[in-house]
Length: 318
Length: 61
Image (cartoon, rainbow over all chains, first blue to last red; front, side):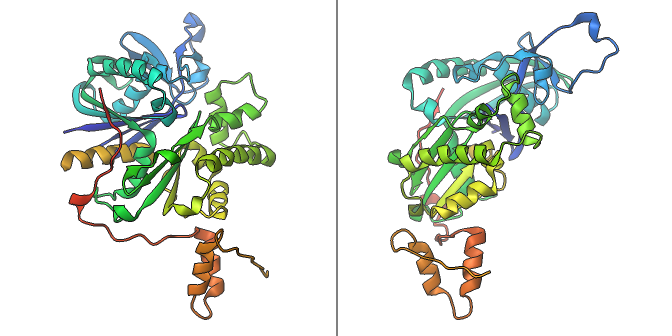
């Protein structure tokens, strides 16, 4: 059975297939057609131009130079053609052009969304359209994708499964002795999630709107697209001041301390997400200073999607 | 550089335990490693795979 795992973050869209990951910056726009004016001119970036179900999009790094954003940065938009374009651009990097009926799609969604029953009902019914055959074309060729089964989990379950299961999908620890906490700093939100002996501990589940976007909001570059700013931040061309980073870190730890008053109780604290990658050593040292036993993943940005894939493979093999 | 540490029971139990268990002549090395890598709590070797289960909410669409 071919399992596809999808982590549709607002910073990056990540896909895992057969243990191999693919990642695209979640920038997607309706490209602005300038007709004959672009003859003989090189475009400002090399964003990929793709087509989903008859609609054209520019996706990935540099897409912001081609038009206005088609990514509403809200959860309901996760099932939109624009978000499908980001997902399929990753899939097309994994397989040759053709028709694919994948058996299972595992999607990780943010904790605050899954805690809001009103929003999830609408989103879940929209996500079901992925079961129908979608058409996708890009530079490599033409594709058609459908998925027989769709399973939805909380994104941090992926980070937890990635930590717990080794490369051969075997548990690395005796699970009944573990109490692990996942600290996921995404583009929009901070998600906090904890597991005691393999079961979610509801009192340690929470978070807040202090993702990378909170840091970007502090920077006075309001004329730029949020993904353009994020790109500049990743490339270190945009450098927040120490006081801005400190303020952001304070806001993150304000939320952390609300839900996890004693970091020392956990056998492991696992930082993941683009925000964790961005803060790096500063976040790790702050956690250590507050008594956490930090288990830093090999790649904090990809930990969720790899773990979602591991979880599905492991559960199916049982 | 000389370092002076004040540790409080309750807040710093992990560090106190590490220091108490450090072998003679190894105290500075143990503290240096803890500063670099953080506290690593020992976790048991895995049990039989059959006993393992992650019990989480899964929505089938």
